[in-house]
Image 1: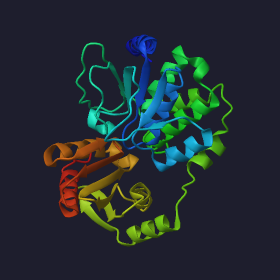
Image 2: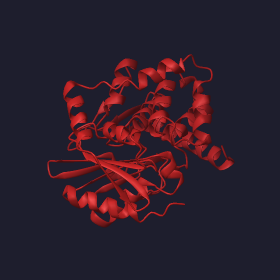
Image 3: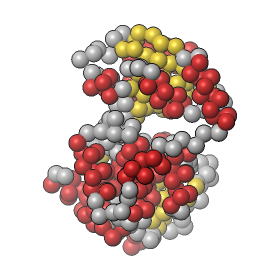
Length: 330
């Protein structure tokens, strides 16, 4: 951790202390409710009784872990969220823009943005602050903050949430860097987590018979093409798109995509192998650019990303293939 980052964590602690002295703090998660954003929100909220983790959605993996740990999380209605009467601060974790929360945040309330994505579309005002660090997961930032300023909060429950977020956002460490492994080691230190048992529990996909049938059909209609220098495997599914992508990656794809259309909205989920990432692919940047060009919301990490828009599936697929084909192999 650099001196600059250390100073930012001290300023974060001052910001949180000041907000807590004036009222409640809402720790808002990304609307996709993935494990990194949920783990970050709940772990940070544990540092102060005035704070509460909240958001509009929790993914299946995060929901399963939260139920086992009995961890508190407040569900908010995207249309009419019920904020505390005396809301003194809003912390948004793992979100590059306000629309990624799925909420219209209250105005005239100080905001703190904590994120690890390379882009930020937040407009900050006096009293606001932002921590934007080049790490693999937001849980790494939260862990460093707690280690420095609220070490007593690092119970086994919190450590499990932080570790789960880190594992999920690095694709089970396939897209990890040195800081990711250092964070994982530090999270496990001084705790009593059995790592082997935790991984086995983490990787247990609880799929219904309907899910399994949908995945099987999606794999059956998969197709492979050369997109420039990259071998792309693609399919469509109505559910479990990330599971389908993982299966396609196991079949040898450089890049895998799975698409769906629901209620007038098309969704493309993309994954890239570590080899493809090192050779120049960044699916997060590709989908962010496509969203800027064609509309919708897109972005993510180098090896895992998504794009939602109103284009039909054929147009979505064509746009992605064209963009991927234009990426030169290093």
